[in-house]
Length: 225
Image (cartoon, rainbow, N blue to C red):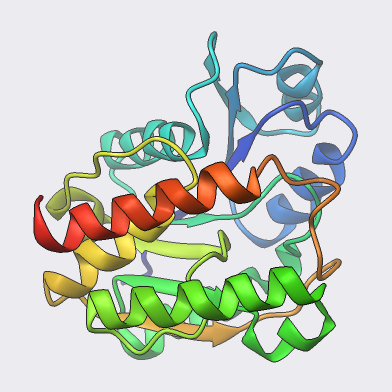
């Protein structure tokens, strides 16, 4: 039986980059759901015009909060899995079939689109941060991952039902790796290509604040929650 899989795109002030991403994703998989996380521009309008379903937060809740809204929608609508990608153009919808193939082949509950083979093309500080965070989260989760910060992923419905995710920022994507790994869920990484390697100019990630939040979330996920 073919699994039902949806695409979830958390978006904040992404009216410029979002339309071609939605259009390309829809050529690979339907439905495409955009979670407009309190945008102040026309993000929701351009997403609808491109054929996406839109879930709207009136107030910005953070990337993790947007993803959790999307996950709840996917479970309520009986999808077997959800593929997540970012709205800034770094993630290429043409890579979606790789996730579907990996899911069919491995049955993994969390499939991460890995960028480790591209780290050498990143700015030194970003490359070092990605490698260090991947090493820390691999140790904490007990899972040999090579890229912990990629938002291009497949989440199974089984994982989403089983795990209670507590964070709402960028740290949620680290929390889920730790909690899934400690729960014995299968995690695999597949190599992906990117529209561009360094997403500094388009990312809402705050290097110091969000890195510290990730570190604290990983610690709590491993030892306290």
